[in-house]
Amino acid sequence: MEACPKVASCLAIKGSLIEETYAVFRGWDYELSKTGNLKRVRQENTIGAKSANWALNVTWAVSRRFDPSGRDRPLVELAKAGCDREVWKPLLLYHLTRDEFLVRDFLVNWLYPRFAAGAYRLRAEDLLPYLHSLGKQPGIEETVNWSEATTNRVASGLLRLAVDFGLLRGAQSREFASYHLPEPSFLYLLHAMMDRAANARRLIDAEDWRLYLMDAADVERELLRLHQYRKLHYAVAGSLAQIKLPAASAADFVKELH
View 1 (cartoon, one colour):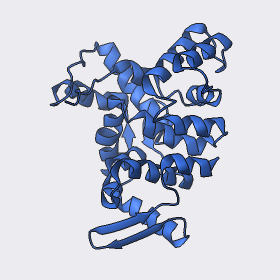
View 2 (cartoon, one colour):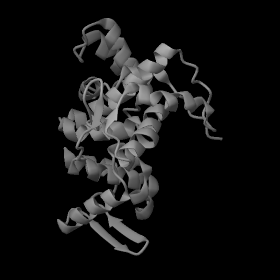
View 3 (tube, rainbow, N blue to C red):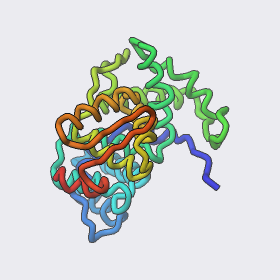
View 4 (cartoon, one colour):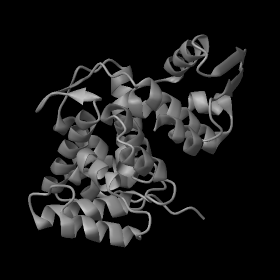
């Protein structure tokens, strides 16, 4: 039986840690265990942390969020190869949200609907009804018993995370940014989602695209553009769709991005 998702406040509050995670993965040694790598990060301060406590926080978050030698290895490979941050960041978001329920649910089921509805300004207090409702949702483990201060910190942290990934802009009052998913990132995501879905129509309709403020029509437009430039094959007839990607898997495509 699949476990109920847990709503963890700590990871939302700690934030995206984009630069820190990139630095950790850039220096990753496959000869060492995950514990050994993260211990070395703390001992040698390879991330340039300003304090031992912050280095501990970063390595704890990386350990909790990622499996660098397993399914998250593409992130490590790309960081080690010096992948452009603007290409790498969307991939980090995809990998980050596969297990982190709160961040994913916020982006897919709270932020995206407001984007689609044409919302203009967003403030932390706008999230409070959503956060208060989490413990009442069916199938969610009742771990949402936060103090008012913690709830406010989670709300601010989620909006700040969306800013870090380029979806929003601004400080106290956030606005939607003019976000465009870089082409190499889009192609990687197609491979990663196809690895899981193996069905073109499900891939196009996947809610994962909401992480990037995209809907199925946006995905299809980009597929048609890439087909036109012969970067992939895309054919559609009614409700049937066929996609042929340039590589056999996400792992193989990563080799082309090096």
